[in-house]
Image (tube, rainbow, N blue to C red; front, side, top):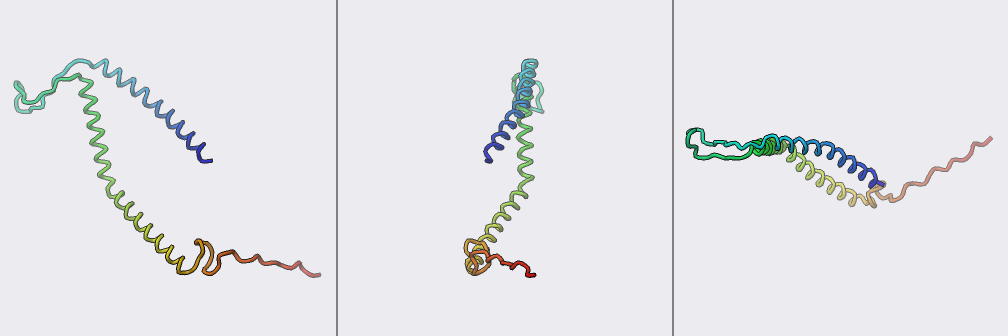
Amino acid sequence: MNGAPRSARRVVRNIVAALILVPLAVVIIAFAVANRQIITVSLDPFSAEHPAALVTLPLFGLIIALLIVGVLIGGIAAWLKQARWRRTARRLEREVGTLRTEIEGFKRTAGIAGGSGLPGQAEPPERLQLQPPRR
């Protein structure tokens, strides 16, 4: 029964992803075709005439590489910022496991069968039978 909504959600997610990724791919390809000129990037701030390190590549390659580096730096920064929440979640999961173990121990000592009902009472009590009113 839960399979149908999940598959429908997956189809919608795939359609939305296609609606976003296809135009993005077209824009990136158009950008790459428009910026094919070769540039030289100097990585030596001290010598402009004879740099110790330089890279020659197409302009779109440089811009795409810088975007990828920016996304990686942003992802690492977000991951580091969320460390406190991950640590708290792990601690709370350990506490929940400990409490569940304690509850099961209490249920065993109280004699509750299957964790339902009151101590010493595995089945629900009989229903009260009322007599019809007398006239």
